[in-house]
Length: 67
Image 1 (cartoon, helix red, strand yellow):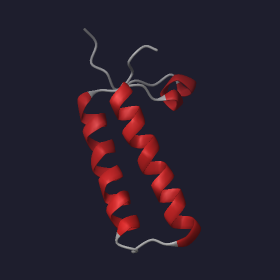
Image 2: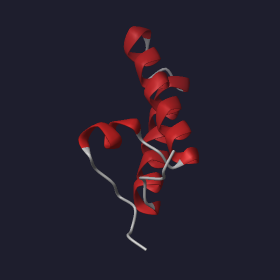
Image 3: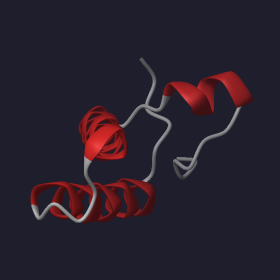
Image 4: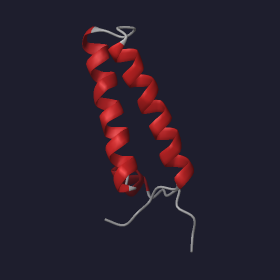
């Protein structure tokens, strides 16, 4: 897997994941929507750690700086 995520993108994903996790664990979001938020948070965290987003590959995007 070739990296296609820059540091700003990873930072934004971590912030969004933290907000979704806080909303889930404080019961601000419940039910099916809560589980969807939890799944999205997990995906954002995973893709941030590996610096690879499969959707960027499908659409030909990248937020990595060219070296």
